[in-house]
Image (cartoon, rainbow over all chains, first blue to last red; front, side, top):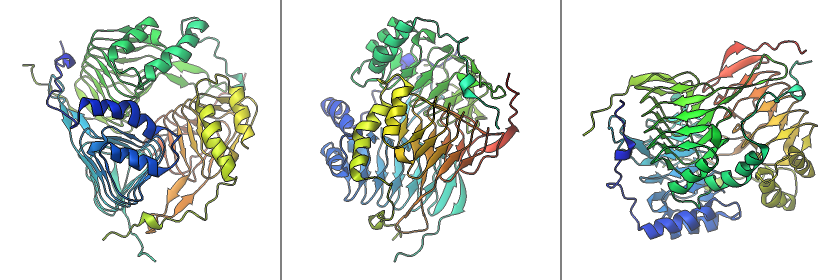
Length: 186
Length: 186
Length: 186
């Protein structure tokens, strides 16, 4: 008989940090509005996320379809873009710097499980993306990942380790493929 | 002139096994309800799937956004979790054991095509996931795949062959990377 | 201080080619209708795309959930299939031949950014898929990709270079794995 018993899973030590009432308000009202295409402007989306506790900098662009698990665990700097259908699954903090591009369909995964544990205990780890980085379309970032300044996770890459600054990564698993040089501004 | 002619595709030998009326009822009523976030509780989702012929064990957790092609070709054991936006595209049987975790965004593909055939004939093959296995977030399982007891398909992996029991796989194509050891239960 | 400044991003040189009014009509009315599962028949979807300027050949099959950015930048031949949740993100032309199968969840990405540019300038490049090719489920095609006649991008593959005719590719990044031989038609 195999040893895993999900009936023994105990999530009582995890708490996302707000009341159940606020969680329900986000899930049934805030999130559907955030994802909706009927809000064409980023400004309304920024206000909505801030209303639920997110720290969102000036000039942040938010496209339709963006999904955030818990807005109060989200911090985004200035002039950062979050593309269509990006999914920030923040059971733990997701911190995104300024001038970051998160392209369409990117997925940020903060939850893991202890697979040596018969009760499959939950492990959550934050994700941090530093200034100037680019997370490509449909890229996957795993729990605990830190993306260095101006690093690039290419479209479709699967990232489970930290990414060095000014370095371009691609593949599954993602590997460094070249250096990113940025020209001086005009 | 190239030889493929999809106008000659003939799907008349394939039948999913229920009446067109029931298929339509699932497609237009059951499935939208299953996917909806307005059903917060797993119990209602389990009942809905059972109503359309699925065999769903006790304690199965079903998150919003789960998609099932034909419920009458789905069998799930006890205490299994099916995560947000998991897509069980079961043109053929999908059988999932007990204490399995299918994480968010996982996709199970049972349909293939004969690419040597100018008419691109459909080939369907079942997928089987044995007890205690874990299919990670955004993982892909292809037609005919069998996932052994307590095996792990890591997040983002693309699986087209069988996975050995108690073994962890990652990458595209997925490859064995380590053994999974599970501690004795307390 | 890092050099990327998305506040300097200037998209004024890019124009998708129709009036803002038509763009809005597509975004708020046409596209939701195209994606909706309430249109079961391909015929209505073909007409809808043509109404907004797409060139769609006879016998094209369009499943629910298909997403097209700008229909007037889309050309599809005859008897081609476009599967559930396929996403044709055509900032530039996407041209698809006849008898092509684009499977469920495939994503066509035509937009890139100049990562050496502090203002992260947009670069768009067309995608072309020649007759008889197959783009597998959840496959990714990047900007500028040309898929040769009867080539196959396997399910889950990430394609950033051109694919040779009659060749099967798999993996991330996609690599040639075998030749595709098609039998003579009956």
